Amino acid sequence: MEDLGVRYQTLIVWDIDRWTRKGAAEVAYTLDAIEKTGTRLLDYAGQDTDQHGHRLPMIIRAETARDEIVRLAERINRGKRYQREEGSWLGGQVPFGLAAIRSVDAPTYLVIDAEAAEDIRLAAKWIIEGATLTAVVRRFNEMGKKTSTNSSWHHTTLYRLMKSPHLIGQRLYRQWETDKDSGKKICVGEDIARDE
Image (cartoon, rainbow, N blue to C red; front, side, top):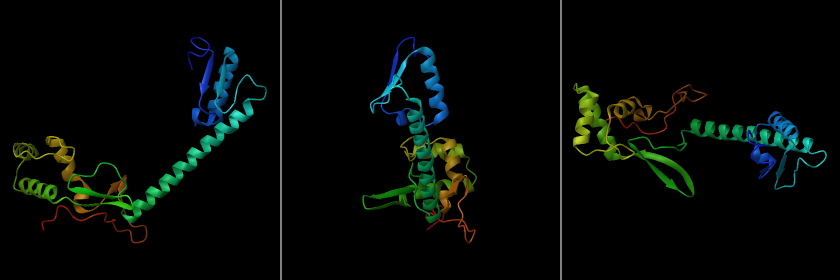
């Protein structure tokens, strides 16, 4: 916007409601700047600041777009909250020790990755026996073991892993996930750390 009236005279946007989702204040500020610089804003839907009476329709469309973003965020958050309450997998990077079972006609769910789970148990065993995180990491790297991102192990990676609630089948999202009726922690998976 700093270059409006300097490097270019016309700002073309795909659609006013795609140009900004910040609402009336943002559009009014921009329209004032366009008026002051004697420049022009237009979109592919036909909105044009050179047309008489352009401000109100642009502001209404911008407010409608802002309102839709707010409602969309509410719907997404409600859906994610429901998935968390049900113990469903929400997506993202699959934690070490688990594997995602994906299907086009069913929700993705997580199962224990036997080989990675054995590595977790081995690391826990060594730590309990007195090994430092650095020593465990050195052993893992010497054995050619890789993290879930196929990287070499580092002590901070192992530290985060050993503190992760997914090792005991729990999930932490800002706070411990609990059942709203019973207050008990929601189990989202099997206990990886437990010896078979």
